Amino acid sequence: MTLHSAVTIVLFSASLALVPLKATAQSVTIFGADPDALQCYGKANYAVDTDGTTPDELASCTRALDGGQLSTRDRAATHVNRGILSAVLEDYENAMRDYDAAMDLYPRYGAIYVNRGNIFFLGESYDSAIDEYTKALDADMSEYQVPHLNRGMAYESLGLYADAEDDYRRALEISPNWILAQTKLARVLARMN
Image (tube, rainbow, N blue to C red; front, side, top):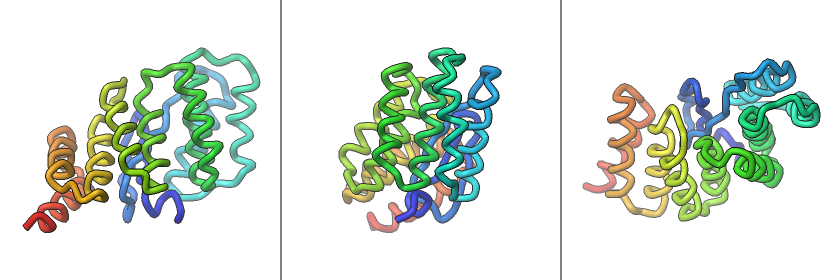
């Protein structure tokens, strides 16, 4: 299973509704001036848009992390972005290592937990995914609709349709025109009837 067969990628700064995707991930914007960190962010975005990357594209992230010029916040963000690239490559072990490193540095980043949840979701560990998405809702995020949608999908996968409906509705309260959330809500309501 490829990352995009089950995961939509969403940035801290902008949502990318990639169809036919089921969940949403988050990358982190780099605000510093480190060119390798900025390139890492760009590559993570491109990988999300195209559902592809190569191991060589991880190099800019690693250079940024090895260079020692990043603030703690940007270092955590670069770990998340490198984790996304690893996840696109289906290297979930290294993706989790990067998400864990980001969590150690800056545990308030909601994107960490969204992406950790996505790895659990892909592995069909839905209870663990729900826990991670819930942590994302308690963290700093700009797009709270994302963990609501993802948690709703995990609930739906467990057959907990009322909980899924609640999360899809919450996602739509935040982002009323989000077609992906509208589609998932309609599907879960049909299953409940």
